[in-house]
Image (cartoon, rainbow, N blue to C red; front, top):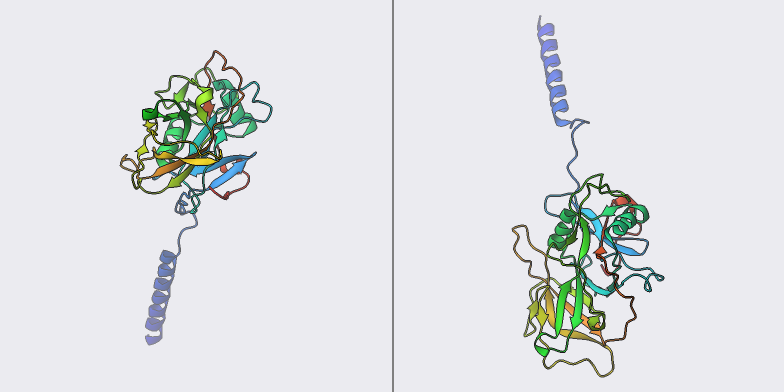
Length: 297
Protein backbone atom coordinates (compact mmCIF):
# COMPACT_ATOMS: atom_id res chain seq x y z
CA UNK A 1 0.00 0.00 0.00
CA UNK A 2 2.75 2.43 0.95
CA UNK A 3 4.53 1.57 -2.30
CA UNK A 4 1.43 2.36 -4.38
CA UNK A 5 0.91 5.75 -2.65
CA UNK A 6 4.55 6.69 -3.22
CA UNK A 7 4.29 5.74 -6.91
CA UNK A 8 1.14 7.86 -7.36
CA UNK A 9 2.83 10.87 -5.71
CA UNK A 10 5.92 10.48 -7.92
CA UNK A 11 3.85 10.25 -11.10
CA UNK A 12 1.86 13.34 -10.13
CA UNK A 13 5.05 15.30 -9.49
CA UNK A 14 6.46 14.22 -12.85
CA UNK A 15 3.28 15.31 -14.63
CA UNK A 16 3.36 18.74 -12.98
CA UNK A 17 6.96 19.17 -14.07
CA UNK A 18 6.02 18.36 -17.65
CA UNK A 19 3.13 20.86 -17.56
CA UNK A 20 5.44 23.60 -16.32
CA UNK A 21 7.96 22.70 -19.03
CA UNK A 22 5.27 23.04 -21.71
CA UNK A 23 4.12 26.40 -20.34
CA UNK A 24 7.65 27.78 -20.38
CA UNK A 25 8.37 26.83 -24.01
CA UNK A 26 7.11 29.32 -26.62
CA UNK A 27 4.95 27.90 -29.38
CA UNK A 28 6.66 27.36 -32.70
CA UNK A 29 3.73 29.14 -34.38
CA UNK A 30 4.01 32.28 -32.21
CA UNK A 31 4.41 35.48 -34.24
CA UNK A 32 7.90 36.99 -33.76
CA UNK A 33 8.03 40.63 -32.63
CA UNK A 34 8.32 43.16 -35.47
CA UNK A 35 11.84 44.24 -36.38
CA UNK A 36 12.30 47.95 -35.51
CA UNK A 37 12.71 50.22 -38.52
CA UNK A 38 16.18 51.75 -38.69
CA UNK A 39 17.01 54.77 -40.84
CA UNK A 40 19.73 53.73 -43.30
CA UNK A 41 21.18 54.71 -46.66
CA UNK A 42 21.79 52.67 -49.80
CA UNK A 43 22.23 53.10 -53.53
CA UNK A 44 21.20 51.64 -56.86
CA UNK A 45 22.80 52.49 -60.20
CA UNK A 46 24.57 55.39 -58.52
CA UNK A 47 21.36 56.93 -57.12
CA UNK A 48 21.28 57.32 -53.30
CA UNK A 49 18.28 56.06 -51.33
CA UNK A 50 17.16 56.55 -47.74
CA UNK A 51 15.06 54.27 -45.56
CA UNK A 52 12.22 56.33 -44.11
CA UNK A 53 10.76 55.21 -40.77
CA UNK A 54 7.38 56.85 -40.06
CA UNK A 55 6.27 56.37 -36.42
CA UNK A 56 4.69 52.96 -35.90
CA UNK A 57 5.26 51.78 -39.51
CA UNK A 58 7.70 49.28 -41.08
CA UNK A 59 9.37 51.92 -43.28
CA UNK A 60 10.23 52.14 -46.98
CA UNK A 61 13.12 53.12 -49.29
CA UNK A 62 12.91 56.31 -51.39
CA UNK A 63 15.33 58.37 -53.50
CA UNK A 64 17.38 60.67 -51.27
CA UNK A 65 17.29 63.20 -54.14
CA UNK A 66 15.13 63.38 -57.26
CA UNK A 67 16.14 61.04 -60.07
CA UNK A 68 18.92 62.73 -62.04
CA UNK A 69 19.90 63.21 -65.66
CA UNK A 70 22.32 60.93 -67.44
CA UNK A 71 25.28 62.36 -69.32
CA UNK A 72 23.48 62.39 -72.67
CA UNK A 73 20.21 63.92 -71.48
CA UNK A 74 21.35 67.48 -70.76
CA UNK A 75 20.72 68.58 -74.36
CA UNK A 76 17.15 67.26 -74.49
CA UNK A 77 15.85 67.12 -70.91
CA UNK A 78 15.66 70.07 -68.48
CA UNK A 79 18.17 69.26 -65.71
CA UNK A 80 18.15 72.06 -63.11
CA UNK A 81 20.50 72.06 -60.11
CA UNK A 82 18.64 71.20 -56.93
CA UNK A 83 19.51 71.27 -53.25
CA UNK A 84 17.99 68.00 -52.05
CA UNK A 85 17.79 68.33 -48.27
CA UNK A 86 17.26 65.38 -45.90
CA UNK A 87 18.03 64.75 -42.25
CA UNK A 88 21.45 63.14 -41.98
CA UNK A 89 21.74 59.41 -41.37
CA UNK A 90 25.46 59.53 -40.51
CA UNK A 91 26.53 61.23 -37.30
CA UNK A 92 29.15 63.44 -38.96
CA UNK A 93 26.47 65.45 -40.80
CA UNK A 94 28.52 65.72 -43.97
CA UNK A 95 27.33 68.29 -46.54
CA UNK A 96 24.75 67.13 -49.07
CA UNK A 97 26.12 68.12 -52.47
CA UNK A 98 24.03 69.86 -55.10
CA UNK A 99 22.47 67.40 -57.54
CA UNK A 100 20.85 67.54 -60.98
CA UNK A 101 17.15 66.69 -61.26
CA UNK A 102 15.59 65.29 -64.43
CA UNK A 103 12.29 66.96 -65.33
CA UNK A 104 10.04 64.63 -67.28
CA UNK A 105 6.41 63.73 -67.95
CA UNK A 106 4.48 61.51 -65.55
CA UNK A 107 4.39 58.44 -67.83
CA UNK A 108 8.17 58.44 -68.23
CA UNK A 109 8.62 58.84 -64.46
CA UNK A 110 6.42 55.80 -63.76
CA UNK A 111 8.17 53.75 -66.46
CA UNK A 112 11.69 54.50 -65.19
CA UNK A 113 10.81 53.66 -61.57
CA UNK A 114 9.30 50.31 -62.61
CA UNK A 115 11.46 49.11 -65.50
CA UNK A 116 14.87 50.58 -64.70
CA UNK A 117 14.83 50.75 -60.90
CA UNK A 118 12.59 47.81 -60.00
CA UNK A 119 10.18 49.83 -57.87
CA UNK A 120 7.32 52.29 -58.33
CA UNK A 121 6.76 56.03 -58.54
CA UNK A 122 6.29 57.43 -55.03
CA UNK A 123 2.69 57.86 -53.93
CA UNK A 124 1.49 61.08 -52.35
CA UNK A 125 1.25 59.33 -48.98
CA UNK A 126 4.83 57.99 -49.23
CA UNK A 127 6.22 61.33 -50.37
CA UNK A 128 4.46 63.18 -47.57
CA UNK A 129 5.68 60.70 -44.94
CA UNK A 130 9.26 61.10 -46.23
CA UNK A 131 9.07 64.87 -45.85
CA UNK A 132 7.54 64.77 -42.37
CA UNK A 133 9.86 62.03 -41.06
CA UNK A 134 13.16 62.93 -42.78
CA UNK A 135 12.69 66.49 -44.08
CA UNK A 136 13.05 65.38 -47.73
CA UNK A 137 12.59 68.35 -50.07
CA UNK A 138 13.85 69.39 -53.50
CA UNK A 139 14.86 73.03 -53.14
CA UNK A 140 15.64 75.45 -55.95
CA UNK A 141 17.96 78.22 -54.74
CA UNK A 142 17.58 81.33 -56.86
CA UNK A 143 19.30 84.72 -56.65
CA UNK A 144 17.81 88.04 -57.67
CA UNK A 145 18.99 91.64 -57.73
CA UNK A 146 16.57 92.63 -54.95
CA UNK A 147 18.70 92.91 -51.81
CA UNK A 148 15.74 92.61 -49.40
CA UNK A 149 14.81 89.24 -50.86
CA UNK A 150 18.01 88.30 -52.67
CA UNK A 151 17.93 84.52 -52.25
CA UNK A 152 14.75 82.47 -52.46
CA UNK A 153 14.16 78.82 -51.53
CA UNK A 154 11.44 77.31 -53.72
CA UNK A 155 10.34 73.67 -53.75
CA UNK A 156 10.70 71.88 -57.08
CA UNK A 157 7.46 70.02 -58.00
CA UNK A 158 7.65 66.21 -58.11
CA UNK A 159 5.35 63.67 -59.73
CA UNK A 160 3.41 61.37 -57.37
CA UNK A 161 0.58 58.88 -57.79
CA UNK A 162 -2.50 59.79 -55.80
CA UNK A 163 -3.23 56.24 -54.66
CA UNK A 164 -1.22 53.10 -54.02
CA UNK A 165 -2.08 49.85 -55.78
CA UNK A 166 -1.17 47.43 -58.52
CA UNK A 167 -2.74 49.62 -61.20
CA UNK A 168 -0.18 52.38 -60.47
CA UNK A 169 2.90 50.25 -59.64
CA UNK A 170 3.74 49.27 -63.22
CA UNK A 171 5.63 50.70 -66.16
CA UNK A 172 2.32 51.25 -67.97
CA UNK A 173 -0.07 52.67 -65.34
CA UNK A 174 -3.75 51.95 -65.86
CA UNK A 175 -6.13 54.69 -66.93
CA UNK A 176 -7.57 54.63 -63.42
CA UNK A 177 -4.20 55.66 -61.95
CA UNK A 178 -4.21 59.36 -61.16
CA UNK A 179 -1.06 61.50 -60.97
CA UNK A 180 -0.44 64.76 -59.16
CA UNK A 181 2.29 67.14 -58.07
CA UNK A 182 4.02 67.23 -54.72
CA UNK A 183 3.59 69.56 -52.99
CA UNK A 184 -0.08 69.77 -53.97
CA UNK A 185 0.15 73.57 -54.17
CA UNK A 186 2.59 73.36 -57.12
CA UNK A 187 1.59 75.08 -60.32
CA UNK A 188 4.13 73.61 -62.71
CA UNK A 189 7.84 74.06 -63.14
CA UNK A 190 8.88 77.58 -64.11
CA UNK A 191 12.67 77.83 -64.22
CA UNK A 192 14.65 81.05 -64.18
CA UNK A 193 17.83 79.37 -65.42
CA UNK A 194 20.13 82.39 -65.16
CA UNK A 195 19.31 82.85 -61.47
CA UNK A 196 19.57 79.21 -60.33
CA UNK A 197 22.46 78.42 -57.97
CA UNK A 198 24.20 75.07 -57.30
CA UNK A 199 24.20 74.87 -53.52
CA UNK A 200 25.04 72.23 -50.94
CA UNK A 201 23.31 71.80 -47.58
CA UNK A 202 24.60 70.72 -44.16
CA UNK A 203 22.12 69.37 -41.63
CA UNK A 204 22.17 70.80 -38.12
CA UNK A 205 19.97 68.90 -35.60
CA UNK A 206 18.94 71.97 -33.61
CA UNK A 207 17.45 75.44 -34.01
CA UNK A 208 19.30 78.23 -35.79
CA UNK A 209 21.76 80.05 -33.56
CA UNK A 210 23.26 83.50 -33.52
CA UNK A 211 22.18 86.41 -35.67
CA UNK A 212 21.72 84.31 -38.83
CA UNK A 213 17.98 84.00 -39.63
CA UNK A 214 16.43 80.69 -40.62
CA UNK A 215 13.90 80.66 -43.45
CA UNK A 216 11.15 78.20 -44.38
CA UNK A 217 10.87 76.74 -47.88
CA UNK A 218 9.08 79.30 -50.02
CA UNK A 219 10.67 82.21 -48.18
CA UNK A 220 13.37 84.71 -49.05
CA UNK A 221 16.70 85.61 -47.50
CA UNK A 222 17.86 89.20 -47.13
CA UNK A 223 21.49 89.78 -48.09
CA UNK A 224 21.94 93.54 -48.33
CA UNK A 225 25.59 93.54 -47.17
CA UNK A 226 26.57 90.06 -48.39
CA UNK A 227 28.70 89.44 -51.49
CA UNK A 228 30.29 86.54 -53.33
CA UNK A 229 33.94 85.84 -52.41
CA UNK A 230 36.49 87.56 -54.64
CA UNK A 231 38.36 84.31 -55.31
CA UNK A 232 35.25 82.70 -56.78
CA UNK A 233 35.12 79.94 -54.15
CA UNK A 234 32.21 78.55 -52.20
CA UNK A 235 30.53 80.72 -49.59
CA UNK A 236 27.79 80.11 -47.01
CA UNK A 237 24.62 82.12 -47.54
CA UNK A 238 23.69 84.59 -44.78
CA UNK A 239 20.66 82.56 -43.69
CA UNK A 240 19.71 79.00 -42.83
CA UNK A 241 16.92 76.84 -44.26
CA UNK A 242 14.36 75.47 -41.83
CA UNK A 243 13.65 71.72 -42.07
CA UNK A 244 10.11 70.86 -43.27
CA UNK A 245 10.04 67.79 -40.98
CA UNK A 246 7.52 67.45 -38.15
CA UNK A 247 7.34 65.37 -34.97
CA UNK A 248 4.70 62.78 -34.07
CA UNK A 249 2.29 65.55 -33.01
CA UNK A 250 2.73 67.43 -36.29
CA UNK A 251 4.80 70.22 -34.73
CA UNK A 252 7.86 71.55 -36.66
CA UNK A 253 11.17 69.85 -35.81
CA UNK A 254 13.89 72.17 -34.48
CA UNK A 255 16.45 71.55 -37.24
CA UNK A 256 17.98 73.71 -39.95
CA UNK A 257 20.30 73.42 -42.96
CA UNK A 258 23.18 75.75 -43.67
CA UNK A 259 23.42 76.51 -47.40
CA UNK A 260 26.69 77.08 -49.28
CA UNK A 261 27.07 77.92 -52.97
CA UNK A 262 29.95 78.51 -55.40
CA UNK A 263 30.08 81.74 -57.34
CA UNK A 264 27.57 81.77 -60.26
CA UNK A 265 28.64 80.11 -63.49
CA UNK A 266 26.93 80.18 -66.91
CA UNK A 267 24.82 77.06 -67.47
CA UNK A 268 23.69 75.63 -70.81
CA UNK A 269 20.19 74.22 -70.89
CA UNK A 270 17.50 73.22 -73.37
CA UNK A 271 14.34 75.23 -73.80
CA UNK A 272 11.64 73.90 -71.46
CA UNK A 273 8.99 72.14 -73.62
CA UNK A 274 5.45 73.45 -73.50
CA UNK A 275 3.99 70.58 -71.44
CA UNK A 276 3.74 69.42 -67.85
CA UNK A 277 7.13 68.39 -66.49
CA UNK A 278 8.29 67.64 -62.95
CA UNK A 279 10.99 65.85 -60.99
CA UNK A 280 10.27 62.45 -59.42
CA UNK A 281 11.42 59.91 -56.84
CA UNK A 282 11.13 56.13 -56.84
CA UNK A 283 10.23 53.81 -53.96
CA UNK A 284 12.11 50.47 -54.02
CA UNK A 285 11.92 47.18 -52.15
CA UNK A 286 15.05 46.49 -50.13
CA UNK A 287 15.86 43.50 -52.37
CA UNK A 288 16.32 45.86 -55.34
CA UNK A 289 19.07 47.93 -53.67
CA UNK A 290 22.82 47.54 -53.92
CA UNK A 291 25.39 49.02 -51.53
CA UNK A 292 24.10 49.88 -48.07
CA UNK A 293 25.11 52.48 -45.46
CA UNK A 294 26.73 55.02 -47.77
CA UNK A 295 29.40 57.29 -46.25
CA UNK A 296 28.34 60.91 -45.77
CA UNK A 297 24.63 60.13 -45.54
